[in-house]
Amino acid sequence: MSAQGTNTQGTSVQTLTVSADEDGMRLDRWFRRRFPALSLAHLNRIVRKGEVRVDGKRAETSTRIAEGNAIRVPPLKLEAPAAPAVKKVRPASPDDVRMLKELVLFEDKYLMAINKPYGLAVQGGSGTTRHIDGMLMAMANEKGERPVLVHRLDRDTSGVLLIAKSRKIASDLGEIFRSRQTRKIYWAVVEGVPKPFQGRISLFLAKGAGMGDKRGERAPTSSRVDPEKMRVAKHGEEDAQHSVTFYATVDKVAPRLAWLSMKPITGRTHQLRAHAEAIGHPIIGDPKYGLDLKSNDPRRTDPMRAVPAEIERKLHLMARRLVLPHPRGGTLDVTAPLPPHMQKTFDLFGFDVKQYDPIEDAPQE
Image (cartoon, helix red, strand yellow):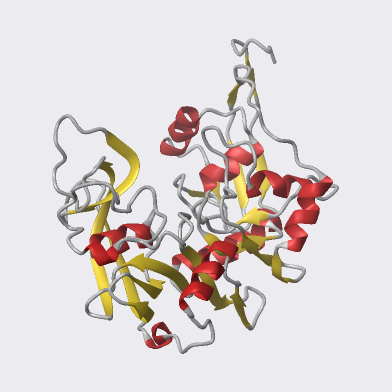
C-alpha cells in the first residue's frame, strides 16, 4: 500500500475464527485488531448491510464475540493510513519492568495488582510521555502479547491498579467490573468534617463544568469551561450519568479536616473528587475540585478549615482496597499502603490505619 494514504487494497471474503485471546471482545474492536487499516465508517456500513456474520447470524458492532465463533468478513477496502505525527514517547525499557515488579502487590499467572504511585499516569495523553500502559509494552511476550489494563486511576490517585496478563482475562475482569461484583474502598483526607459523619451521595454528573462553577450552577458566559471537569447535573440532562458513593468518617481533626473512607458504587470520571466537593468537603490537594484558599468563596466561612501548612498539597486520595471474584476461582482481595504524602499526614494527626473502618458495613448498592 502507498505510504501516501491515497491507494486502497481490497480483500476477498474470509471466514475467521475467534481465538481464546479474543474471547469477550466487542466486534468492532476485533475488526480494529485484525484489520487496523479498516475505517470505522466502512465497518459500520458493512455491519449495517448485514455483510458481517457471526456463526451465520447478523451482528452489531457492539456484539460480544466468543472463542470459536466463525466470523464472516466480506470484501474490505483497506486504506493506507496517513503517516502519523511524530510523538515524543518514552520507549519501554528493562527499567520499566523492574519498576513495575517493585510495585506488585499480588501476582499469579493470570493477573497482577500493582500499587500505582502518585503522579504516574495510567495512560497517555496530551504531554504525557511516561505512563503505565506504555511501560507494559516492556512486558510483551515473544508473540507481542502484553499485559492489559483492566481499569483506570487518575494520575494523582495512588493505590490498587489491576492488570490482566491476557485479553481473555481482561475481558473476564471487565465483565466482573461491569456487573458490579467488585468492592472498591478509597481513602481520602478532606477539608472540614462532613455532617452527617456517614452517608450516601447520589448525584447526576456530566462533563464540562465552568471554571469556578462548584456545584453545577450555570457558569457565567465569561468563564472558561474545563471539558474534563465533572459537574452536578439534572436528571434527564444530556450526557448526565447517575453516580452513587457511600462515605464514612473514620477519624477527624475538627473542624479542619477528616479522614474519609469511600465506597463508589458506580464508576464515573472523577466521581469521588466531584462528590467530595459537592458535599462541601473537597479532597485536600485537589487542584480541579478544591476550594481556592485565597478566594472569597462564600462556602469557606470557617477560617479554622484552612488546611494546615504542614500538609503537602498533593491529592489525598488513594484506592486502598479492591475485592472481587478471581476469574479462575476464589476471591482476590488486595490492599495498598498509604502513599508517602498521605502517610505524613496520618502521622501528623495520629490517624491509625488499623482503626475500624465503618465503610466495611456499607451496602453494595
